[in-house]
Image (cartoon, rainbow, N blue to C red; front, side, top):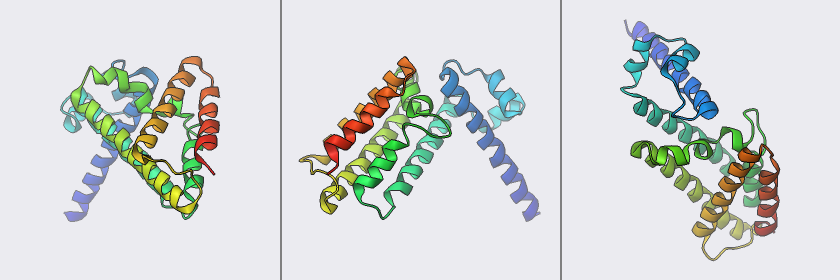
Length: 200
């Protein structure tokens, strides 16, 4: 009985994870407002009842999707931060991944870029999750700025928290312009500027 229960839970968790993953891909392509339940169910290969078993509403799905996205994003950043390299090298590696990856550039795969304006007026719960995620990223960048000042790889800043927030804002702006122009140039410029202004 215990083995069967564990198997059922595993299948249930896999189904939920599949819905979230397919939903994230559709939201990145069409926005949250453009996400149709029929399209999501087809992509996830689950019946309509399964969606409402896991998520009470489309907004509840959106919250779960953003929570998972933020957790994945922070886990990837934490893995970089945990590296024994100098802080500048770690920061450089983090931002370099914004230019290109298997999932595309930051302009293509960042849900902050895709959804910030849309959900700010649509769902307070979703806005809060995404905003908290941005704040968590900025806190980690501020940590790297402090560690870089200590190890000599980053030019010291009088207010690392403010500097981290402004830096991340620059990157978000560059990603939006890159998406609008369909040109990765703004992201490369942001990387060049970051290296010039912050790294020793």
